[in-house]
Amino acid sequence: MGLPARIVIPTFAAFAVVLLGVMGWFLRIGFGTTGSAFGPSVVHEQGDAQIRATAAPIATDPPGTFTVPQTGTGPVQNPNALPGASTGGGSAVAGPPAPVMQELIALRARLARNPKDLAALVQLADMEFDARRFDKATPLFVRALALDPSNPDVRTDYAVALHESGRDLDALAQADTVLKERPDFPTALFDRGVILQAIGRRSDAATAFRRYLRVVGNNGSHANEARAALQELAG
Image (cartoon, rainbow, N blue to C red; front, side):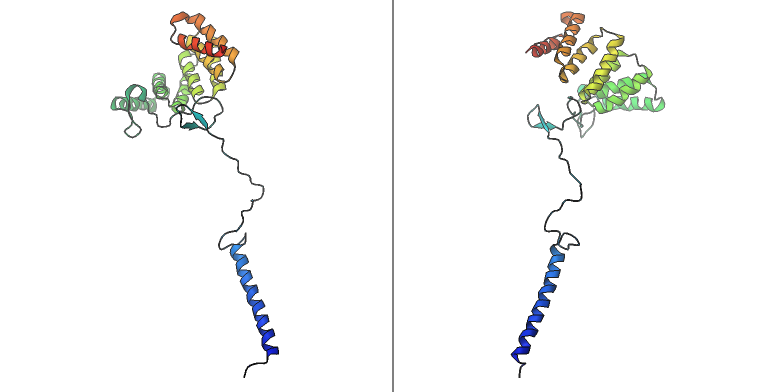
């Protein structure tokens, strides 16, 4: 004989309420935003934290290559370039060719023995410069200039390395330093025009190129480039 309906129905109803409450508690833990076993169902901000988007890349030549904007206008260089590669080949896998590697080892050994070996510093800096490894060349030029601050060739190369690294204002300061001591130093005149054009100082760039042409005449190593730049600036 079963229990009367007046007892069974209330008992069943109470049991159902308790069961639903327990199930709801587990679901809240499972899908809540804290202490979650399954992960929060909604993404929430964490305090006042903000994530800033990376600067959009700029398309460059050749098509399909991109670079993140720099503080200046110089291009980002190939990190896989090799010392001496411009004069001796080599690859990122195999490294520089044997003669270049031997010269690199010899120069680095000289600097290990004598960190103030000016000739070794300049030669090694030039090799890195020719390979367009400006991040390697720049500190070597700095060390060389600390020993011989009046060398216009080293300082001009240093200015170009800074420009190619995107540090145009620093590059301009170095070119100006050369021209302050040697107002008609041709390479610094031409490079100053390039830097000024890169940062948008068009009239100053044109002045620099015209001054360069007055100094070197028609046979300067960059005369054609200077005339082409003047035509572009006049356009």
